[in-house]
Length: 260
Image 1: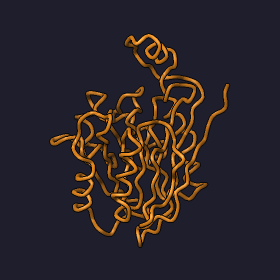
Image 2 (image 1 turned 120 degrees about the horizontal axis):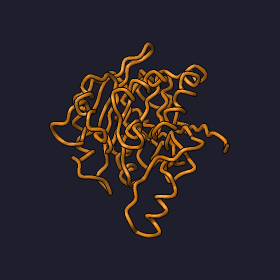
Image 3 (image 1 turned 90 degrees about the vertical axis):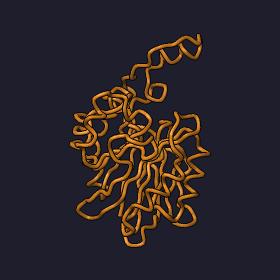
C-alpha cells in the first residue's frame, strides 16, 4: 500500500500544482491516500477553512500544519469544524483542533500525527515526550504517519531514530528544500528530513527574491511576498504493509514546471 506525503504548499502557485496533479497521481501511482502540509497555503502564512476545502477538492485526503497554523485569525474558530486536518500536537495546551487523527480511506485506516520542532523555532512543548503521549492514546492496529515540522536536521533525524519501529513513517517539513536522505530505518520506519515544497521555485523558498535579497544585503526589514512563476510539487511516496505497519520503501518525488 502506498501513501504520498507532500511538502509545504506555498500560496496560489502551490495550490495550482495540487489541482493540476493530485487526482492524476493518485490514479497513476495507485495511492491509498495523499497527505499535504498546507500551513503556508494562504499566501505563505497559515490556512483558512475555504483553502482547506480547495485543497481537499484538488485531491488531498488529509492536511498537516506547522508553526504558521494560526497565521490567519479566523482559522482558530474554523479548525474544529474541519475533518482530516491536524495541527502540531505540541504547540501548547488549550489550542483548538487536534494534534493527531485517524484517517479512514476506502482501502486503509492510518493515524496521522503532527509535531513542531523546538530548535531554532518558536517555543513549544517537547516533541519527543508529546510523541510518546500521542502514541499511547492511538489505536494499536493502525499504521502511524508523522509530519515533523522542524528547522534543524539534527532534531528531525534524532526523532526519526527515537520513533523507529513505533511509527510507519516520519517525514520533515518546514525548510521547503527537499533532502536526499530518504531511507527505511533499521526497525521499519520510513524517514526523510524534508519533503520539500509545493510552490514557486524561482524564489527564496517560495518568497519573492527582491525583498529577501534586500534584507540580506541591507539588514533592513522587508515584507516578503509570495513569488510568482513556475512551480514545483515535491514530496515522497511511502510503501508499507498495513498488517505489520512496517515501511518497505520511501521514494522522493518531484514535478517541476519549466521556465516560461
